[in-house]
Structure formats: structure tokens, C-alpha cells
Length: 241
Image 1 (cartoon, rainbow, N blue to C red):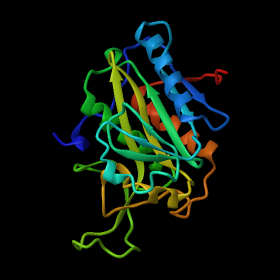
Image 2: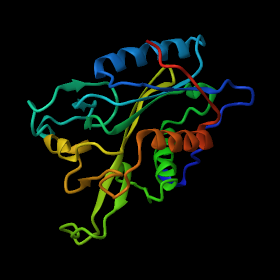
Image 3: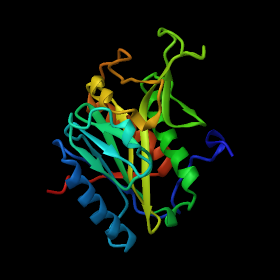
């Protein structure tokens, strides 16, 4: 079944507590983020904490998912490289990119990994739509893409398109962690040190590259609205020290 035909709604049962919505005020080192995500995951799995969405920015770095091919790390000495347990291949994170870590208990929602990935794609697409950007999914490429008719066509003659949002998740005891990244205004040449997500022949773009100078708080507001349409209510959660 195609992802765009899957039901993207992952609403919890009535009476389920709102998802905590947390925004990190400063750049978060990647190793620290993983440690904190795993601690939150365990608390959620044990029923000791409500679900959590954590919005962060990282210092410049590359991450290698479980399917990463070493040949796709073009510049291994450019930025720190972190091996990570999420699915997918190499990705870049850095300032100007909104990383959305999603810690949801799918036992309380729907235990369907493929549909969950489609829901995260819908989250990015809905966020972009609120800013008048048309994001699209591709069956052969996870993530969200935008068409670039102003660019030369690809070698096979198909229209150019660039990736604007990447998705990579992991589940433990049916609680998700990792999530998605949306390019707001990162340094796009930082992506040159890898083959992003192992996909050759396509570019990477951002809201700023598309001519939209939108602040991170504005993007966060649209993300939250799109998230609640798919996953249900949220409540603001103070950043834990």
C-alpha cells in the first residue's frame, strides 16, 4: 500500500493526556539529546510520563543511521559524525534546521510503523502548507520534497526537486524516538559532506532557499498546529535543565 493512501491520523483514545511540547532554547549537543530522549522514552514506556515532542537545533554534525553506507560520507573530517540507532542513512543537522524529536507511545495509538512514517511526512507537509509551500512524498524516497521548476531537469528528463524534510525513527517497546528535521535556514553547503539519506542526483533546499524568511518561532507555531491535527492536543512543557 502506498504511503499517501495510509490514514495519517494517530489520535489517542479519548481522555489521553496532551502530548508535552518542549522547545530547547539553545543548541543541544547530539549525544546529550540521545541520552535525554532515551531517558524520556523509558519513562513514557513505564507510564511514568506523558508523551513528548522535543524541538531542538544542533551544532553542525552528521549522523549515520542503521543503513548508512560509508561511501556516502564524502567529507568525514568536516563535522563530528555520530552513529545512531535510527533508521535511514547519513543526515546533516545544524543551526537553522528544526529537529523534531517525537516520543509517542504507539500502543496507546496505532501499532503501524509504515503508517507512522506517513504521519510524520504528513506533519511536515501540513507545516509547509501553512507557509504556502507544497511539500510532497515520493514512494521510492522517504522524506518530503519540493518541485523546483526553475532548475534544470534531472539527467533522465524528469523535473528537478529538492528535499526539505528528512525522517528517521526508531521504536523501543512501541515508543518512538528520533523523528524528523525541517530545513528552515541552515547552511545548505554543509550537506555537501554527505550523500543525504543515500539519495544521489537530488538537491537539498530550505524555506530560506525558497525565498521564505520565516523565523524559527513562526515555524514552531505551524508545526504545533499541524501536529495537533494528526496526533491530538499538546501542552507546553518547560525545557528541563
